[in-house]
Image (tube, rainbow, N blue to C red; front, side, top):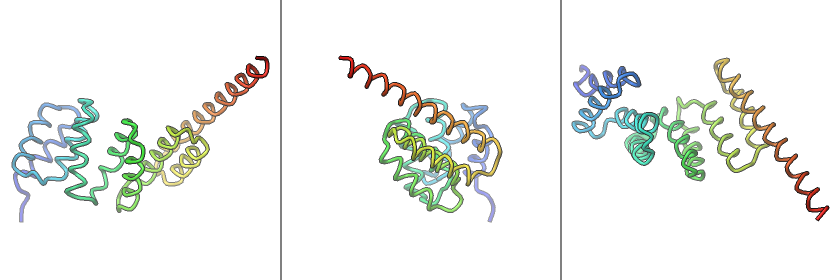
Amino acid sequence: MGINTYEVMYIQARDNYPYNINECIEKLQYVISADNEHVGAHYLMGLIYQEQLEDYKQAKYYFQMTLYLEEQYAPVYSHYAYLLIHLNELEEALRVMELGLKVRGTDVGLLTYLKGLLYEKYEMYSTAMELYGEAKKACLNNSFMYAMDEQIKRVKNKKALLKKQSKKKDKKEKTS
């Protein structure tokens, strides 16, 4: 059993991403039009819409289609969750991350980091820092470890800033 034409076209599309988007899109459109159930093609098309075209509605469609076709497709979870956080669809993002953490092969560190980002959006800074710490435990490279350290520093600075603003506000209210 050999690799079919659609698989070859998909591989060529992946090879072209992100350096030759036109060629990549052309190949993906061919694959999707011929085989609408090609999971990888839908996922890559979602990435293009998210990262290159900034058409988040279409990106969301393709990520949802990927999960509809194959719930165990690990790479989609982090990108889809990040998109949902970006769109402030936080409850849905949390649901996607929880599902993703149950799928073998997902990047646990990255999904945990994204959960931290979500809690940061909820202004639950202590929880966010805890999650960034958990993400550090799951990381497998130094650059990710450094990035989590920087996230923790940034959130600590944010907390300190809010505390300072709160004290100023309290002081103002007492003098009024």
